[in-house]
Image (cartoon, rainbow, N blue to C red; front, side):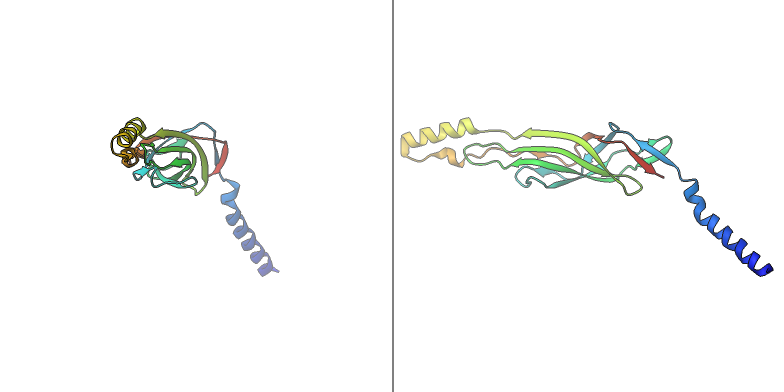
Length: 172
């Protein structure tokens, strides 16, 4: 009987120790609208991207909530390309729209962020049309076809502020 009580006592102690961390688990609430500074990792161009592509970003500084680190400096994330148009002939400018993304916290959770970047490359359409008209009038060759517009280029190292989009409870 004594052995049974001892075994039962050891089993209860083991169960208590196994459950103890979850009994005292702490959590923090990540609210929507928390600003997280990010940097684009590599130079990207509207000529190389298409809708649905992801652009790698890094978190610029540690973000803490209630004294607990949530996002670490150098943490990973991605931004989503919502529209991309290549630059082209007749001076057509490239265009790039980025809307939204996600960042990963220290605990492996992904958080949606709101960030909107919309940019248009340099258009050379006016000069291209003029060159085409003059070329056709003079020697029947539309030279403007060979004048390309410029793509949108976002330099690696470009810094932006992303805002969290929804409140999330994070278990620490």
